[in-house]
Image (tube, rainbow, N blue to C red):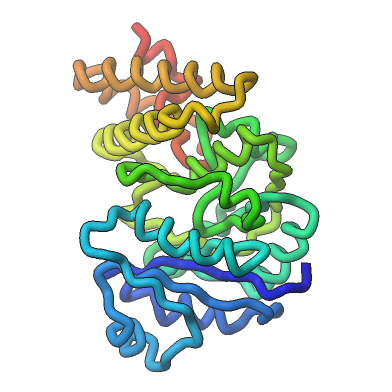
Length: 300
């Protein structure tokens, strides 16, 4: 796939202090045969240019008033899939390794969806020596009913598949997991590169926290987001493969039971969080919610 690809990100006020470093990493790509697309959510082009100190060669997509985060992204995606064979997603608070675009191009030539491992760094950009992704030998797609490793910072999608992953409900928060689940449902060829091609920034306000320690508040917020995810996935029956639908419904039921248990008892929640923080760590998204190793904690 030697055609120009789209590299896409969204910028909003919380990302401002990371943009300069992020943009430098975009400029350092070994494969520069791509067009940069940037969605603006509550930021102006002039503000981003002033932060970067240079005007990037980019296509700017400005959010409409009242757009949800899902709608901001969908607005850009609809344009890109008509113009490019594939879209590479990156987050503007993370850092691209120099091989990010090159490796994504190679992967997407063979697969419909490709994810990659992430080096985890702290808020200041210091590498923490841990890698985000499935364990060796673990099926990255097999975990999709309960967990996710295909984010909007570490994936590339062929446009023909991405088109089938739309539309996105306005209320949807975990767009990355929705796309990956829909791709899996349609039996897309999905692959996960165990080599880190991005550095993933973790800080106190992360939507999807993966580092210990988890607080009771972290677990509650994560659980609420996961509940909404299942609502979004199950809302469109046309995108649910019959042979996999039951896996999603079973996972949704488990999370609902978990939510009711921890919501109704702070003692149960505190006990769960204590034991969660004692488990061997896993670096995948939403592992903290209804963890199967701790079912006795919240089912009794």
